[in-house]
Amino acid sequence: MSETFILIPGRTSDQGCGISEGKFQEKYQREINSLQVAPGDMTKLGLVAGDRVRLTSESGQVEVSVVVAKAEELPQGMLFIAYGNISSQLMGGDTHGSGMPTSKGIDVELEVLRPSAN
Amino acid sequence: MSAQATAAVADPKADESLKVIQDATCTFCGCVCDDIDLTVKDNHIVEAKRACVLGKAWFLNHKTEDRPSCLVDGQPAPLEAGYDRAAQILVNGKYPIIYGLSDSPCEAQRVAVSIADWVNGTIDTTTSVCHGPSGMAFQGVGEVTCSLGEVINRGDMIIFWGSNPAESHPRHFTKYSLMPKGMFLPNGRKDRTCVLVDVRKTKSAKAADIFVQIKPRADFEGLWTLRALAKGVDLDPVIVKRDTGVELSLWQDLMARMKACKFGVIFFGMGLTMTRGKHANSEALLALTRDMNAFTRFVAKPNRGHGNVTGADNVVSWRTGYPFGVNHSRGYPRFNPGEYTTSDTLANGEADSGMTIACDPMANFSEPARRHLASIPYIALDTKETPTTRAAAVAFTVATYGIHTGGTVYRMDDVPIPLRPSCESPNPSDFEVLSQIERRVKKLVGITS
Image (cartoon, rainbow over all chains, first blue to last red; front, side, top):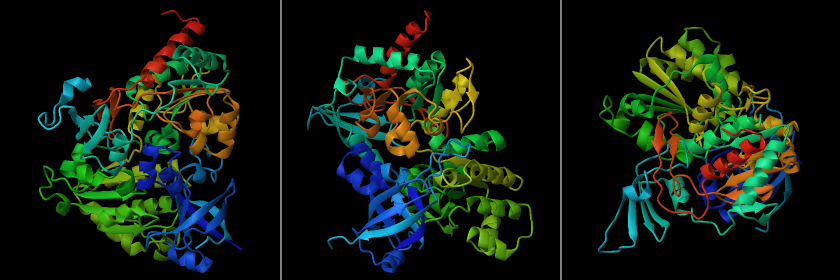
Protein backbone atom coordinates (compact mmCIF):
# COMPACT_ATOMS: atom_id res chain seq x y z
CA MET A 1 0.00 0.00 0.00
CA SER A 2 1.36 3.45 -0.80
CA GLU A 3 0.05 6.96 -0.23
CA THR A 4 1.01 10.24 -1.87
CA PHE A 5 2.47 12.99 0.33
CA ILE A 6 4.25 16.30 -0.02
CA LEU A 7 7.70 16.23 1.57
CA ILE A 8 9.23 19.35 3.11
CA PRO A 9 12.94 18.99 3.95
CA GLY A 10 14.19 21.74 6.27
CA ARG A 11 16.44 22.84 9.06
CA THR A 12 16.14 21.66 12.65
CA SER A 13 18.08 22.55 15.78
CA ASP A 14 19.44 19.02 16.15
CA GLN A 15 20.50 18.93 12.52
CA GLY A 16 22.33 22.26 12.95
CA CYS A 17 24.03 21.17 16.17
CA GLY A 18 24.83 17.81 14.59
CA ILE A 19 26.78 19.47 11.79
CA SER A 20 29.14 20.95 14.38
CA GLU A 21 29.45 17.69 16.26
CA GLY A 22 30.25 15.84 13.04
CA LYS A 23 28.24 14.46 10.16
CA PHE A 24 29.18 10.89 10.97
CA GLN A 25 28.10 11.21 14.58
CA GLU A 26 24.93 9.67 15.98
CA LYS A 27 22.97 12.89 16.58
CA TYR A 28 23.25 14.13 13.03
CA GLN A 29 22.64 10.73 11.48
CA ARG A 30 19.58 10.13 13.66
CA GLU A 31 18.11 13.51 12.79
CA ILE A 32 18.52 13.31 9.02
CA ASN A 33 17.17 9.74 8.98
CA SER A 34 13.95 10.54 10.88
CA LEU A 35 10.79 11.29 8.96
CA GLN A 36 8.19 13.36 10.81
CA VAL A 37 4.63 12.26 10.13
CA ALA A 38 1.45 14.04 11.29
CA PRO A 39 -0.34 12.21 14.13
CA GLY A 40 -3.44 11.70 11.97
CA ASP A 41 -1.38 10.14 9.17
CA MET A 42 0.41 7.87 11.64
CA THR A 43 -2.96 6.52 12.75
CA LYS A 44 -4.28 6.26 9.22
CA LEU A 45 -1.26 4.25 8.09
CA GLY A 46 -1.10 2.14 11.25
CA LEU A 47 2.39 3.41 12.06
CA VAL A 48 4.15 3.72 15.37
CA ALA A 49 7.37 5.60 16.02
CA GLY A 50 10.36 3.66 14.75
CA ASP A 51 8.56 1.92 11.90
CA ARG A 52 10.37 1.92 8.59
CA VAL A 53 8.90 3.42 5.42
CA ARG A 54 10.09 3.81 1.85
CA LEU A 55 9.77 7.19 0.13
CA THR A 56 9.85 7.33 -3.63
CA SER A 57 10.05 10.57 -5.60
CA GLU A 58 10.37 11.14 -9.31
CA SER A 59 14.14 11.12 -8.85
CA GLY A 60 15.02 8.71 -6.06
CA GLN A 61 14.12 6.36 -3.29
CA VAL A 62 15.08 6.20 0.40
CA GLU A 63 14.14 4.20 3.47
CA VAL A 64 13.75 5.95 6.82
CA SER A 65 12.25 5.56 10.29
CA VAL A 66 9.19 7.56 11.27
CA VAL A 67 8.62 9.78 14.28
CA VAL A 68 5.39 11.50 15.24
CA ALA A 69 5.37 15.21 14.45
CA LYS A 70 4.51 17.55 17.29
CA ALA A 71 0.82 18.41 17.52
CA GLU A 72 -0.33 20.83 14.80
CA GLU A 73 3.20 21.28 13.42
CA LEU A 74 2.38 19.31 10.27
CA PRO A 75 -0.95 19.21 8.44
CA GLN A 76 -2.10 15.82 7.25
CA GLY A 77 -0.72 14.90 3.86
CA MET A 78 2.61 16.59 4.54
CA LEU A 79 5.86 15.03 5.72
CA PHE A 80 8.95 16.70 7.14
CA ILE A 81 12.58 15.57 7.23
CA ALA A 82 15.75 17.39 8.24
CA TYR A 83 17.99 18.40 5.34
CA GLY A 84 20.83 16.06 4.58
CA ASN A 85 22.07 13.14 2.62
CA ILE A 86 18.71 11.33 2.74
CA SER A 87 16.45 14.19 1.68
CA SER A 88 18.83 15.15 -1.12
CA GLN A 89 18.52 11.71 -2.69
CA LEU A 90 14.92 12.58 -3.48
CA MET A 91 15.85 15.74 -5.42
CA GLY A 92 16.16 15.78 -9.17
CA GLY A 93 19.20 17.07 -11.01
CA ASP A 94 17.22 19.61 -13.03
CA THR A 95 17.25 23.16 -11.65
CA HIS A 96 14.83 24.63 -14.20
CA GLY A 97 17.32 27.31 -15.20
CA SER A 98 17.73 28.57 -11.64
CA GLY A 99 20.75 26.68 -10.25
CA MET A 100 18.52 25.40 -7.47
CA PRO A 101 17.05 21.89 -7.55
CA THR A 102 13.50 21.70 -6.22
CA SER A 103 14.38 20.81 -2.65
CA LYS A 104 11.10 21.49 -0.85
CA GLY A 105 7.55 20.52 -1.66
CA ILE A 106 8.56 17.22 -3.28
CA ASP A 107 5.83 14.76 -4.26
CA VAL A 108 6.60 11.36 -2.74
CA GLU A 109 4.94 7.98 -2.47
CA LEU A 110 5.11 6.55 1.05
CA GLU A 111 5.15 2.80 1.45
CA VAL A 112 5.08 1.11 4.87
CA LEU A 113 7.89 -1.45 4.99
CA ARG A 114 7.61 -3.30 8.23
CA PRO A 115 6.72 -2.57 11.78
CA SER A 116 9.45 -1.85 14.28
CA ALA A 117 10.19 -4.16 17.18
CA ASN A 118 7.89 -2.06 19.42
CA MET B 1 42.76 41.66 15.58
CA SER B 2 44.77 38.90 17.18
CA ALA B 3 43.47 36.63 19.88
CA GLN B 4 46.08 37.99 22.24
CA ALA B 5 44.87 41.56 21.75
CA THR B 6 41.37 40.76 22.95
CA ALA B 7 42.22 38.25 25.61
CA ALA B 8 41.70 39.08 29.24
CA VAL B 9 42.14 36.83 32.22
CA ALA B 10 38.71 35.87 33.60
CA ASP B 11 39.63 35.27 37.18
CA PRO B 12 43.34 34.82 37.64
CA LYS B 13 42.97 33.98 41.29
CA ALA B 14 40.60 31.16 40.52
CA ASP B 15 42.29 29.68 37.47
CA GLU B 16 45.24 31.26 35.74
CA SER B 17 44.94 28.87 32.81
CA LEU B 18 41.64 30.43 31.75
CA LYS B 19 41.45 33.25 29.26
CA VAL B 20 38.37 35.08 28.03
CA ILE B 21 37.91 36.36 24.51
CA GLN B 22 35.34 39.12 24.67
CA ASP B 23 33.00 39.95 21.82
CA ALA B 24 34.02 36.97 19.73
CA THR B 25 32.08 36.43 16.52
CA CYS B 26 29.97 33.35 15.91
CA THR B 27 30.02 32.31 12.27
CA PHE B 28 27.58 29.43 12.36
CA CYS B 29 24.65 31.30 10.81
CA GLY B 30 24.01 34.58 9.02
CA CYS B 31 23.17 36.43 12.24
CA VAL B 32 26.97 36.56 12.88
CA CYS B 33 26.51 37.46 16.55
CA ASP B 34 29.59 39.40 17.62
CA ASP B 35 28.93 39.61 21.34
CA ILE B 36 30.01 36.13 22.44
CA ASP B 37 32.35 35.81 25.39
CA LEU B 38 34.45 32.69 25.02
CA THR B 39 36.27 31.06 27.90
CA VAL B 40 39.30 29.10 26.75
CA LYS B 41 41.24 26.53 28.71
CA ASP B 42 44.17 24.57 27.31
CA ASN B 43 43.44 25.77 23.78
CA HIS B 44 39.86 24.53 23.99
CA ILE B 45 36.66 26.58 24.32
CA VAL B 46 34.86 25.56 27.50
CA GLU B 47 32.16 28.23 27.58
CA ALA B 48 30.42 30.42 25.00
CA LYS B 49 28.43 33.05 26.86
CA ARG B 50 25.38 34.48 25.06
CA ALA B 51 25.67 31.94 22.22
CA CYS B 52 22.46 30.18 21.14
CA VAL B 53 22.10 26.42 20.96
CA LEU B 54 23.64 26.37 17.47
CA GLY B 55 26.43 28.73 18.50
CA LYS B 56 27.28 26.65 21.56
CA ALA B 57 27.48 23.52 19.40
CA TRP B 58 29.66 25.45 16.95
CA PHE B 59 32.15 26.71 19.54
CA LEU B 60 32.23 23.83 22.00
CA ASN B 61 32.61 21.07 19.40
CA HIS B 62 35.40 22.60 17.43
CA LYS B 63 38.34 20.72 18.72
CA THR B 64 41.21 19.89 16.43
CA GLU B 65 40.47 16.65 14.65
CA ASP B 66 42.98 13.85 14.80
CA ARG B 67 43.36 13.82 11.07
CA PRO B 68 46.24 14.73 8.74
CA SER B 69 46.24 18.26 7.33
CA CYS B 70 46.53 16.77 3.88
CA LEU B 71 45.44 13.54 2.23
CA VAL B 72 46.28 12.66 -1.37
CA ASP B 73 44.23 9.76 -2.76
CA GLY B 74 43.19 9.00 0.79
CA GLN B 75 46.78 8.71 2.09
CA PRO B 76 48.50 11.18 4.42
CA ALA B 77 50.78 13.45 2.45
CA PRO B 78 52.93 16.55 3.02
CA LEU B 79 51.09 19.82 2.47
CA GLU B 80 53.49 20.74 -0.32
CA ALA B 81 52.56 17.56 -2.23
CA GLY B 82 48.88 18.39 -1.79
CA TYR B 83 49.35 21.94 -3.08
CA ASP B 84 51.22 20.65 -6.14
CA ARG B 85 48.62 18.01 -6.96
CA ALA B 86 45.76 20.46 -6.40
CA ALA B 87 47.24 22.98 -8.81
CA GLN B 88 47.76 20.30 -11.45
CA ILE B 89 44.17 19.10 -11.15
CA LEU B 90 42.81 22.60 -11.68
CA VAL B 91 45.19 23.54 -14.50
CA ASN B 92 44.76 20.26 -16.38
CA GLY B 93 40.97 20.45 -16.38
CA LYS B 94 39.08 21.77 -19.39
CA TYR B 95 36.09 22.70 -17.24
CA PRO B 96 37.30 23.21 -13.67
CA ILE B 97 34.76 24.33 -11.10
CA ILE B 98 35.33 25.94 -7.71
CA TYR B 99 32.44 25.75 -5.29
CA GLY B 100 31.43 26.45 -1.69
CA LEU B 101 33.02 29.31 0.28
CA SER B 102 30.09 30.25 2.51
CA ASP B 103 32.05 29.19 5.60
CA SER B 104 35.29 30.91 4.67
CA PRO B 105 36.37 34.48 5.42
CA CYS B 106 36.30 37.06 2.63
CA GLU B 107 40.08 37.00 2.37
CA ALA B 108 40.00 33.31 1.35
CA GLN B 109 37.02 33.83 -0.96
CA ARG B 110 38.99 36.47 -2.80
CA VAL B 111 41.84 34.04 -3.52
CA ALA B 112 39.39 31.37 -4.71
CA VAL B 113 37.94 33.80 -7.26
CA SER B 114 41.44 34.56 -8.50
CA ILE B 115 42.18 30.87 -9.00
CA ALA B 116 38.99 30.46 -11.02
CA ASP B 117 40.10 33.36 -13.17
CA TRP B 118 43.64 31.98 -13.73
CA VAL B 119 42.33 28.55 -14.83
CA ASN B 120 39.43 29.92 -16.92
CA GLY B 121 37.17 28.07 -14.51
CA THR B 122 33.75 28.49 -13.01
CA ILE B 123 33.27 29.96 -9.55
CA ASP B 124 30.07 29.29 -7.66
CA THR B 125 29.11 29.44 -4.00
CA THR B 126 26.53 27.69 -1.86
CA THR B 127 24.34 30.71 -2.51
CA SER B 128 23.23 28.92 -5.67
CA VAL B 129 21.44 26.31 -3.55
CA CYS B 130 20.37 28.80 -0.88
CA HIS B 131 19.22 32.28 -1.90
CA GLY B 132 20.56 32.09 -5.45
CA PRO B 133 17.02 32.45 -6.80
CA SER B 134 16.69 35.57 -4.61
CA GLY B 135 19.92 36.84 -6.16
CA MET B 136 18.27 36.48 -9.56
CA ALA B 137 15.21 38.30 -8.21
CA PHE B 138 17.34 41.18 -6.88
CA GLN B 139 18.58 41.72 -10.42
CA GLY B 140 15.06 41.60 -11.83
CA VAL B 141 13.19 43.66 -9.25
CA GLY B 142 15.75 45.39 -7.04
CA GLU B 143 16.00 45.23 -3.29
CA VAL B 144 14.39 47.69 -0.91
CA THR B 145 16.37 46.94 2.19
CA CYS B 146 18.04 48.14 5.36
CA SER B 147 20.46 47.00 8.05
CA LEU B 148 19.41 44.92 11.03
CA GLY B 149 20.12 48.00 13.16
CA GLU B 150 17.23 49.77 11.45
CA VAL B 151 15.03 46.76 12.12
CA ILE B 152 15.92 47.01 15.81
CA ASN B 153 15.13 50.70 15.96
CA ARG B 154 12.19 51.01 13.57
CA GLY B 155 10.60 47.69 12.55
CA ASP B 156 7.08 47.70 13.99
CA MET B 157 5.76 44.99 11.67
CA ILE B 158 7.94 41.93 11.21
CA ILE B 159 6.88 39.25 8.73
CA PHE B 160 8.70 35.94 8.38
CA TRP B 161 7.85 34.16 5.14
CA GLY B 162 9.09 30.62 4.54
CA SER B 163 11.64 30.98 7.29
CA ASN B 164 11.93 29.32 10.69
CA PRO B 165 14.38 31.40 12.72
CA ALA B 166 13.51 29.61 15.97
CA GLU B 167 15.52 26.68 14.60
CA SER B 168 17.78 28.19 11.95
CA HIS B 169 18.69 31.59 13.53
CA PRO B 170 17.82 31.20 17.23
CA ARG B 171 18.92 34.73 18.32
CA HIS B 172 17.17 36.48 15.45
CA PHE B 173 14.12 37.35 17.56
CA THR B 174 15.98 38.48 20.67
CA LYS B 175 18.91 40.27 19.07
CA TYR B 176 17.48 41.87 15.95
CA SER B 177 13.85 41.51 15.02
CA LEU B 178 11.33 41.14 17.86
CA MET B 179 12.52 41.67 21.39
CA PRO B 180 14.97 44.60 21.28
CA LYS B 181 13.84 48.01 22.49
CA GLY B 182 14.63 50.45 19.72
CA MET B 183 14.92 54.19 19.26
CA PHE B 184 11.33 54.42 18.01
CA LEU B 185 10.07 51.25 19.73
CA PRO B 186 10.68 51.90 23.42
CA ASN B 187 8.57 48.93 24.51
CA GLY B 188 10.34 46.38 22.34
CA ARG B 189 8.17 43.38 21.56
CA LYS B 190 4.97 45.17 22.64
CA ASP B 191 5.53 47.76 19.93
CA ARG B 192 5.88 45.17 17.17
CA THR B 193 3.47 42.90 15.32
CA CYS B 194 4.90 39.61 14.16
CA VAL B 195 3.43 37.54 11.32
CA LEU B 196 4.60 34.09 10.23
CA VAL B 197 3.66 32.74 6.80
CA ASP B 198 4.55 29.09 6.26
CA VAL B 199 3.22 25.74 5.12
CA ARG B 200 4.06 24.25 8.53
CA LYS B 201 3.26 25.55 11.98
CA THR B 202 6.93 25.64 12.88
CA LYS B 203 8.51 26.42 16.25
CA SER B 204 8.67 30.06 15.12
CA ALA B 205 4.86 30.24 15.24
CA LYS B 206 5.03 30.62 19.02
CA ALA B 207 6.75 33.97 18.54
CA ALA B 208 4.16 35.27 16.08
CA ASP B 209 0.97 37.24 16.72
CA ILE B 210 -0.54 35.99 13.46
CA PHE B 211 0.16 32.68 11.74
CA VAL B 212 -0.85 32.31 8.09
CA GLN B 213 -0.71 28.70 6.99
CA ILE B 214 -0.62 28.63 3.21
CA LYS B 215 -0.91 25.65 0.92
CA PRO B 216 2.35 23.97 -0.06
CA ARG B 217 3.79 25.47 -3.25
CA ALA B 218 1.38 28.44 -3.06
CA ASP B 219 3.82 31.18 -2.01
CA PHE B 220 3.62 32.85 -5.39
CA GLU B 221 -0.17 32.91 -5.28
CA GLY B 222 -0.17 34.22 -1.71
CA LEU B 223 2.25 37.03 -2.53
CA TRP B 224 0.32 38.04 -5.63
CA THR B 225 -2.88 38.05 -3.60
CA LEU B 226 -1.27 40.62 -1.32
CA ARG B 227 0.02 42.60 -4.31
CA ALA B 228 -3.51 42.71 -5.71
CA LEU B 229 -4.96 43.79 -2.39
CA ALA B 230 -2.34 46.52 -2.06
CA LYS B 231 -3.55 47.92 -5.39
CA GLY B 232 -7.20 47.63 -4.41
CA VAL B 233 -8.06 44.87 -6.90
CA ASP B 234 -11.29 42.95 -6.21
CA LEU B 235 -10.60 39.25 -5.66
CA ASP B 236 -12.90 36.24 -5.67
CA PRO B 237 -12.82 34.70 -2.17
CA VAL B 238 -13.43 31.20 -3.53
CA ILE B 239 -10.49 31.37 -5.93
CA VAL B 240 -8.20 32.91 -3.30
CA LYS B 241 -9.03 30.17 -0.82
CA ARG B 242 -8.58 27.50 -3.49
CA ASP B 243 -5.23 28.82 -4.71
CA THR B 244 -3.61 29.83 -1.42
CA GLY B 245 -5.40 27.71 1.18
CA VAL B 246 -6.12 30.91 3.14
CA GLU B 247 -9.38 32.90 3.47
CA LEU B 248 -9.46 36.19 1.57
CA SER B 249 -10.54 37.94 4.78
CA LEU B 250 -7.27 36.91 6.45
CA TRP B 251 -5.23 38.29 3.54
CA GLN B 252 -7.28 41.51 3.69
CA ASP B 253 -6.65 41.86 7.40
CA LEU B 254 -2.92 41.30 6.85
CA MET B 255 -2.79 43.91 4.09
CA ALA B 256 -4.63 46.46 6.28
CA ARG B 257 -2.04 45.92 9.00
CA MET B 258 0.82 46.19 6.53
CA LYS B 259 -0.48 49.51 5.23
CA ALA B 260 -1.00 50.81 8.75
CA CYS B 261 2.48 50.03 10.07
CA LYS B 262 5.30 52.57 10.08
CA PHE B 263 8.21 50.34 9.12
CA GLY B 264 7.50 46.85 7.82
CA VAL B 265 10.14 44.18 7.32
CA ILE B 266 9.78 40.88 5.50
CA PHE B 267 12.43 38.30 6.33
CA PHE B 268 12.19 35.47 3.85
CA GLY B 269 13.75 32.05 3.75
CA MET B 270 14.30 29.03 1.62
CA GLY B 271 10.65 28.12 1.85
CA LEU B 272 10.47 30.46 -1.16
CA THR B 273 13.68 29.71 -3.02
CA MET B 274 13.70 25.92 -2.77
CA THR B 275 10.06 25.46 -3.70
CA ARG B 276 8.57 25.35 -7.17
CA GLY B 277 8.62 28.91 -8.50
CA LYS B 278 11.99 29.67 -6.86
CA HIS B 279 13.17 33.04 -8.26
CA ALA B 280 9.59 33.90 -9.28
CA ASN B 281 8.59 33.52 -5.62
CA SER B 282 11.39 35.82 -4.48
CA GLU B 283 10.53 38.30 -7.24
CA ALA B 284 6.93 38.38 -6.06
CA LEU B 285 8.03 39.10 -2.51
CA LEU B 286 10.44 41.83 -3.54
CA ALA B 287 7.81 43.37 -5.81
CA LEU B 288 5.28 43.35 -2.95
CA THR B 289 7.86 45.06 -0.74
CA ARG B 290 8.45 47.70 -3.40
CA ASP B 291 4.69 48.18 -3.85
CA MET B 292 4.17 48.73 -0.13
CA ASN B 293 6.40 51.79 -0.22
CA ALA B 294 3.55 53.65 -1.87
CA PHE B 295 1.80 53.47 1.51
CA THR B 296 4.48 53.22 4.17
CA ARG B 297 8.11 52.21 4.60
CA PHE B 298 8.70 48.53 3.84
CA VAL B 299 11.89 46.50 3.36
CA ALA B 300 12.83 42.88 2.69
CA LYS B 301 15.79 40.79 3.78
CA PRO B 302 16.66 37.18 3.04
CA ASN B 303 17.52 35.22 6.17
CA ARG B 304 20.90 33.85 5.22
CA GLY B 305 22.09 30.50 6.47
CA HIS B 306 25.85 30.10 6.60
CA GLY B 307 28.12 32.48 8.47
CA ASN B 308 29.71 34.14 5.46
CA VAL B 309 27.44 33.27 2.56
CA THR B 310 26.65 36.98 2.34
CA GLY B 311 30.37 37.69 2.13
CA ALA B 312 30.64 35.20 -0.72
CA ASP B 313 27.98 37.14 -2.65
CA ASN B 314 29.83 40.37 -2.00
CA VAL B 315 33.31 39.12 -2.84
CA VAL B 316 32.30 37.29 -6.02
CA SER B 317 30.29 40.36 -7.05
CA TRP B 318 33.10 42.84 -6.57
CA ARG B 319 35.59 40.53 -8.26
CA THR B 320 33.50 39.45 -11.26
CA GLY B 321 30.41 41.66 -11.40
CA TYR B 322 28.08 38.75 -10.59
CA PRO B 323 27.18 37.12 -7.27
CA PHE B 324 27.49 33.37 -8.02
CA GLY B 325 27.57 30.92 -10.94
CA VAL B 326 30.31 32.80 -12.85
CA ASN B 327 32.15 31.21 -15.77
CA HIS B 328 35.56 32.43 -17.02
CA SER B 329 36.10 30.03 -19.94
CA ARG B 330 36.20 32.85 -22.48
CA GLY B 331 38.60 34.88 -20.38
CA TYR B 332 35.93 37.20 -19.02
CA PRO B 333 33.12 36.58 -16.52
CA ARG B 334 29.73 35.32 -17.66
CA PHE B 335 26.75 34.73 -15.37
CA ASN B 336 24.03 32.23 -16.04
CA PRO B 337 22.20 30.41 -13.24
CA GLY B 338 21.09 27.02 -14.49
CA GLU B 339 24.18 26.70 -16.65
CA TYR B 340 27.20 27.77 -14.58
CA THR B 341 25.79 26.86 -11.18
CA THR B 342 27.35 23.80 -9.60
CA SER B 343 24.22 21.65 -9.36
CA ASP B 344 24.03 21.99 -13.15
CA THR B 345 27.69 21.71 -14.12
CA LEU B 346 27.82 18.46 -12.15
CA ALA B 347 24.41 16.94 -12.93
CA ASN B 348 24.93 17.71 -16.63
CA GLY B 349 28.34 16.01 -16.56
CA GLU B 350 30.20 19.10 -17.78
CA ALA B 351 32.77 19.78 -15.05
CA ASP B 352 35.90 17.66 -15.38
CA SER B 353 37.77 18.80 -12.27
CA GLY B 354 37.01 20.88 -9.24
CA MET B 355 37.67 22.26 -5.82
CA THR B 356 35.15 22.42 -2.97
CA ILE B 357 35.71 24.73 -0.03
CA ALA B 358 33.71 24.41 3.20
CA CYS B 359 30.75 22.63 1.65
CA ASP B 360 29.45 19.10 1.23
CA PRO B 361 27.99 18.45 -2.21
CA MET B 362 28.51 14.69 -1.84
CA ALA B 363 25.81 14.80 0.84
CA ASN B 364 23.63 17.69 -0.27
CA PHE B 365 23.42 17.49 -4.06
CA SER B 366 21.20 15.40 -6.30
CA GLU B 367 22.22 11.87 -7.19
CA PRO B 368 23.33 12.70 -10.76
CA ALA B 369 25.45 15.57 -9.43
CA ARG B 370 27.06 13.39 -6.77
CA ARG B 371 27.77 10.60 -9.21
CA HIS B 372 29.56 12.97 -11.54
CA LEU B 373 31.56 14.63 -8.78
CA ALA B 374 32.71 11.19 -7.63
CA SER B 375 33.95 10.49 -11.16
CA ILE B 376 36.22 13.53 -11.53
CA PRO B 377 39.38 14.60 -9.68
CA TYR B 378 38.70 17.29 -7.11
CA ILE B 379 40.18 19.00 -4.09
CA ALA B 380 38.24 19.45 -0.86
CA LEU B 381 38.94 21.87 1.98
CA ASP B 382 37.00 21.41 5.20
CA THR B 383 37.47 21.62 8.94
CA LYS B 384 35.96 18.17 9.45
CA GLU B 385 35.66 14.91 7.62
CA THR B 386 32.58 14.82 5.37
CA PRO B 387 31.34 12.61 2.54
CA THR B 388 32.91 15.18 0.20
CA THR B 389 36.36 15.09 1.79
CA ARG B 390 36.27 11.28 1.80
CA ALA B 391 35.88 11.08 -1.97
CA ALA B 392 38.36 13.85 -2.82
CA ALA B 393 41.63 13.29 -4.67
CA VAL B 394 43.21 15.87 -2.39
CA ALA B 395 41.65 16.68 0.99
CA PHE B 396 42.91 19.46 3.25
CA THR B 397 41.87 19.67 6.89
CA VAL B 398 41.79 23.39 7.55
CA ALA B 399 41.55 25.58 10.62
CA THR B 400 38.11 26.89 11.57
CA TYR B 401 37.40 30.49 10.71
CA GLY B 402 36.41 32.63 13.66
CA ILE B 403 37.80 30.09 16.13
CA HIS B 404 41.32 29.41 14.88
CA THR B 405 41.74 32.13 12.29
CA GLY B 406 40.77 35.75 11.80
CA GLY B 407 39.45 37.64 8.84
CA THR B 408 36.23 39.35 7.81
CA VAL B 409 32.72 38.06 7.34
CA TYR B 410 29.52 39.76 6.20
CA ARG B 411 26.39 39.56 8.34
CA MET B 412 23.17 38.78 6.49
CA ASP B 413 22.50 42.52 6.12
CA ASP B 414 25.83 43.06 4.29
CA VAL B 415 27.56 44.55 7.32
CA PRO B 416 31.23 43.41 7.49
CA ILE B 417 32.32 42.09 10.88
CA PRO B 418 35.84 41.14 12.02
CA LEU B 419 36.61 37.73 13.49
CA ARG B 420 38.34 37.27 16.83
CA PRO B 421 40.05 33.90 16.97
CA SER B 422 40.37 32.21 20.33
CA CYS B 423 42.42 29.04 19.82
CA GLU B 424 45.32 27.82 17.78
CA SER B 425 45.21 25.05 15.20
CA PRO B 426 47.95 22.85 13.76
CA ASN B 427 46.12 22.97 10.43
CA PRO B 428 46.54 25.72 7.84
CA SER B 429 43.74 28.20 7.20
CA ASP B 430 41.79 27.94 3.97
CA PHE B 431 43.32 31.30 3.03
CA GLU B 432 46.77 29.78 3.38
CA VAL B 433 45.89 26.64 1.41
CA LEU B 434 44.24 28.62 -1.37
CA SER B 435 47.15 31.08 -1.53
CA GLN B 436 49.62 28.23 -1.90
CA ILE B 437 47.52 26.63 -4.63
CA GLU B 438 47.13 29.96 -6.41
CA ARG B 439 50.90 30.48 -6.40
CA ARG B 440 51.40 27.10 -8.11
CA VAL B 441 48.53 27.62 -10.53
CA LYS B 442 50.03 30.90 -11.69
CA LYS B 443 53.38 29.24 -12.23
CA LEU B 444 51.83 26.41 -14.21
CA VAL B 445 49.85 28.74 -16.49
CA GLY B 446 52.89 30.99 -16.98
CA ILE B 447 51.92 34.06 -14.98
CA THR B 448 54.96 35.53 -13.32
CA SER B 449 53.64 38.75 -11.78
